[in-house]
Structures are given as structure tokens and as C-alpha cells.
Length: 216
Length: 307
Image 1: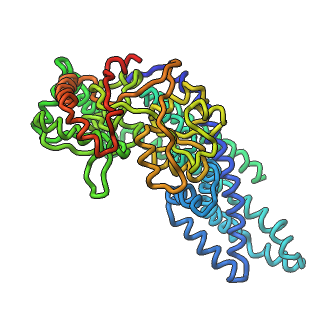
Image 2 (image 1 turned 135 degrees about the horizontal axis):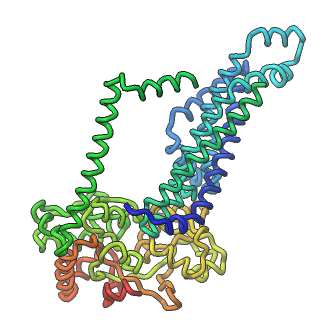
Image 3 (image 1 turned 90 degrees about the vertical axis):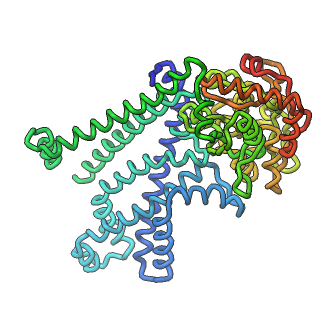
């Protein structure tokens, strides 16, 4: 295969559009999954079974079905029930929801790793449950699990190309579009491959820094 | 961190023959694979010196593989699981006359047809592919077997009043078309920003996007759009129209695509196609798929490649 730098230059505008969409999907997907995961983790710990069981069943269901199937479901089936979102919104919701069921387990591990003495101290000080969670348990729990959450950011980044199938113009989609117009595959695919390495490395460094700051 | 350095240090040391042997084996395999692949492609292009020997090979095998895009009425698998459509039916007849007994479908996305042909996934593209200069740079075409206009899939009643590309731009309608479709270029030619085009995998996904309200219009060939809206109660197809290219209305002609090296097969195919055209057999074969006299063409491959 011969390499053509002109094709690389030609591809760059497409690449920029794709990169922006990929980063949007990643950032929003991370926010959704981190927030929702925490909500799930707290809800399954509520003492009423009427809350904890349905949440448990739902998250187990989402966690045990493929992301691709969920994407197709949200994109093609929901509109039949009158719920239509844009492709990117659908993608962010799907990735965020799917990964929230993983981060939920991460949070659970973090919460369970808080020493029992902390709970007992909170009880002894007569702290109300809300304050126990917000100032004693969660700060310690979340700090412990940041590295694990970071792994899911990288994993999410590598799942964003799936969004191509629901017409989200992220990097792989743009590369394919360019390839189908010009019949050149080597350059666009190489460029986005390198971009994935760069973005995931940057994300790793960022998360490492965050980890270090939190550990202090 | 520390254990990782340790392991990598051990790999580097010469006192671990089993791992080294494994590595050597793996790299040998990889090299062999690369050589093998290169060898394959060289055989194919070397035989291209005298116009390719694909026809002889197909005769020996008794089967030709046709690339199709699952697009009714051009090339698709029907509800009985049989390969049919305009392209496959014509190809089946011609290949039989050329001494190739059977044809076999290879379904793929429309945008993957030309790359798939060039990477030997199938022998001919028979998907009602428009002959245009960009594609002529990648593959060689038969003479066109039909001509075709574009049309839109819109919501019932055509609320935005879209009848051609200029209307789409005037109404600021959200526009979708299929991957690798010629309609991408038609819309861009009319002034629609390329990065705003929604690219869907096929016409069914396009119709679906219109139904769901994600886009206002999906563009395809007039027969594609007419067929796909039959499955939908909420969309309709617009009247066929000619896209404007370089300021002139363009009627597109579609034909069969072959690899650039296989001119002998293409020429043999063309000779049979010409006979079918002249005897009127072509229209008889195409009529069940919704083709009429209007779609029969006097265009030539040469002018379509140049235009």
C-alpha cells in the first residue's frame, strides 16, 4: 500500500469534525456514567426493597446485554414509541447508561472499603444519614476508586466507534466516509488510529494527575 | 511498575529459549502472511497484462460472485432467500451465456462495493451502480443497462415541499443519503454542506430516519425510494428529477463494475449485454422490477465516465 501525504491533508478537516464528536461523546458519556453509577450504587443500598430490587434488576439487565443491541434499541425502537433523540444524544445516553452499570460496581467496592469504624464514628457523633454520606463515606470511597473509574474512561473512548452504526459522525465514521469517497483507506484509518492512542494516553495522564492530587 | 520492568528485562535476556522461539515463530508467521498476501495480489495483477483471465477461472469454477447492496429493486435477497434484482437477473443470464453456470450473492454496504471488488471479495458489482468519473478511476464498467433519476423519501404530504436539491437548501431541510451513494455528490454540487449530510447504512435506515423525524429527506434513486416507501405508512417518495451537475441536468446510467485488470471479462459481458438490449430482452427481464421504457438508455459508459 502506498502512503499519500496529500490524502492525509485532505482528510484533516473530516478528522477534526470527527475528533470533536468523539471527544463530546466521551466527555458527556463519562459524566453520565459517573453520575448515574453513583445514583445506582446509592439506590441499591437503600433499606426499602421496593427501590433496591428494581434498581438491581434493571442495572443487571443493562450490564448483561450488549452495548450495540442497546444502541439499536434506543435508536430504532424508541422513536416508534414517540421518543426521538438526535443520534449523538442517543449515543451518549447509551454509552453513559451502559457504563454506569460498571461504575456502579466500582462505587460499591469503594463504599464497602470504607472501614466500619468510620460508620460507627458517624453514628457515635449522631450525624444524620445525609451528612454521613456526603462528608464521611463518599469522600473516602470516591477517592479510592478514581483509578478504576479512569479505566472506564479509556474503555469508553474505545467504544465510541460503535456509535458509527447509528450515524454519529465520530472519527471512524468520518474515516469511512472519506474512504468511500476517495477509495483510500490506509491514510484515514491510520490517522484515527494514532488519534485514539494520543487521546487515550492524554486521558491516562490526566487521570493519573487527578489520582495523585486526590491521594494527598 | 517494578514487576513490569522485571518481566521485560527477562524477555530481553538470551536465557529464555522458549519465549524467544515463540517470538521468532510469530514473526516468521507474520512475514509469511504478508508475503502470501502480496503474492496473491501479484498473481491477479500480473494476469492483467492481456486483459485478465477471470472469465476462464469463473468458467472452471462454474460460479461468479456478485456484490450486492441489499437494495430493492437493484440487487437483493428476496423473502424466499433467493438472489434477485435487476443486476443479478441480468448477470445470471449473461454469465450463463458466457459459460458460467451459477451466480452467488455477496451482500455488503453500498459504500463497500468498490473496495470489496478491488480486494477480491467478489467478481462483479451488480447493484445498479451509477457510472461516474470518480468510480471510473477505481473500477471499469460495462455499458449502462439502465438510466435513472434521483428522488426523495419525505414525510407523508411532503410538508417542506421538497422536489429537488435546490428546495432542500432553500428549506434548510436536514438531508440524509446512503453510504457511498452518488447522491452525496449531487447534494454537495447543489450547495449542501457536506459535513451536514447524515450518512445512513442503507435505504431502510434512511426511510427510518425520515419517519423518526431525525432528517427531513432521504435521497436515493427513483426506484429505490419508490420501493422503500412501500413498507412505510408515514413516508412517501417524490417525483423523480434530474440532479444538476455543472449546471446541467444529469441523467445517470448504471452498469456492472469489474476490476480494472479484467477488461476481457468486461468486453465479453458487454457483447452479451448489447445483444440483450438490441433484442429487447433486457426490458423484458427488467420490467418485473418496475423498470419501464423510460429507464432504457442510449447513454454510453465512455460519456458517463467523462461527464
